[in-house]
Image (cartoon, rainbow, N blue to C red; front, side, top):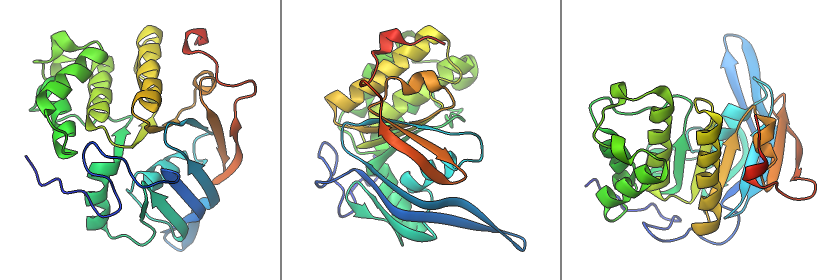
Length: 256
């Protein structure tokens, strides 16, 4: 097993991070230089997400959703502003510090599944639990594959799985890590409606059973109906941040 000592300010395996929002951005901006031009990807973003919240982020392409996800996921740092994730101030963190932090604090579900082609479905999921330092990683991986309906595909390699099955393996891997923050980029994008609903139920369950802060980026406004809060972005800014009117809809009410 890899060295999995948790960074200071982050709970180790099985623990919880310090009190306060699990995600906190204060006046965060991110600018990039493209030749002689300055591109503003985020501009003055304030956001706080508590443990156990299910938050959906909406917005058109180029609105800043992916940059926001990268910032919260400790893949990038602000040009200005303050970034605190799971109790750790990452505003000025270097690449090595960010990489060590991610193992214990943030789980990802990307549009690109990033499965290891030489590992079976079970081994891919086990890797996520192992890197995060979870005890009984193999058994944990089996449980998560069963939860996403792939117990019978555990010994298959990624090239032997459909796109939807690969996505479910990636979701199982994220769940197996047990980290306090889970970020999902279009998690139902490759899935049929029935499987997509099952996955949303799993993600929603994480907020209640594990106190995970789940943040989902999607173009599907129907998914936003089940969120505790909806954040809408445009031109790098948060233009709306609030609860669903009347509260979250039951997942069984979704249709697309």
